Structures are given as structure tokens and as C-alpha cells.
Length: 193
Image (spheres, helix red, strand yellow):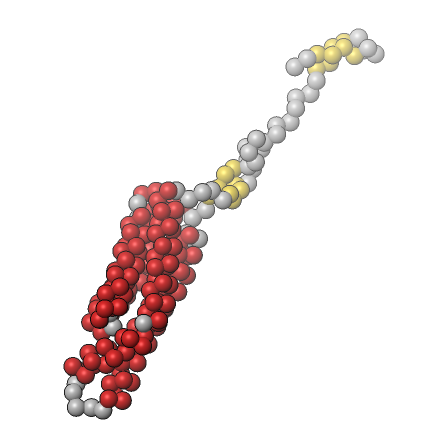
């Protein structure tokens, strides 16, 4: 500190200390930090699985007319002796059940990804549950709807979607992702100077 001379009193005066710019007792501030690499990779794999799942649902809908007679033949193999109309109706029901499951699982996974990115607790368990349902749909599809020439592509798409979901879940349980979720919020103390 520099000293000044007071002309009236003839003595030296010290300047007062400057107040601190930052308060060490400042309230915490919520900040938005970039998630760790493992979380971003998990998110990327989820988004890829959504793209594949959406394409699969559209493709399955487009090949509907070609698949219905094949599905009716599978149903006919289970129980013979009924009218053709019964088999066509059963094939239609099987198609729409599988299609509805594909779309429902896809929409549920999108909702769960939003919750995961918001760091909600126990979301990974729900995401794992959707993978189990997705695997059940894959097995059901292999037996009932993914048959014939176009069914081969459907099987590949369903398997790719399940693989991407599994990869996304594996990325989300790495230590960096687990610590990011456990932290709930990114906080810093006081203003950055």
C-alpha cells in the first residue's frame, strides 16, 4: 500500500484496503458442464439405436402386405382346419402386436434417455428392462414375423438395434458415467474471477 501525506495535518495517511472481489462464503452456483466421454458415447449409441429402431418400424410397416401371407402360414401350422379368413385375421393381429411393441419400446427408450441425461436415479435399470423386452420382441419376431426373403433384413435390423442398446448400456456403467450420475448437479462456489 502506498502512503499519502495529508496537507492539513502534515502527517501520512494509509489508503484503506480494497474489499475482496470474491466472497469465500458465496452460495453454490449450478453450472452446466459437458458430460464425460462415456456418457456422450452412451447417448450416441442410444441415438443410433433410435434411428435403427425407427427405420425398422417403417420397414416392417412397408413390407406388411408381403409378410401377412407368411405369418398366416405360420399360424396355420399351429392349428389347421379353420377358414382362411381366421388365419388372415390372426396374421393381422400378430403383425400389429409386434409392430405396436416395436414402437412402444422405441418411445419408452427415448423417454428414458431424456431421464438419463437429466441424471434421474435408477434409470439404467429401466433401460435394461427395455432391452429385455426388446430381446423378447426379437425372439418373437424370429418365430412369427421375420420370415421369408424380406424377413432376413428385418432380423438384421432388430439384432442391430438390440446390439446398439446393449452397447449404450455398457457405456453408461463405466466409472465416469456412474460418477456423473451420482453427482446429480454440477456446482461451483461463487463467481469465477
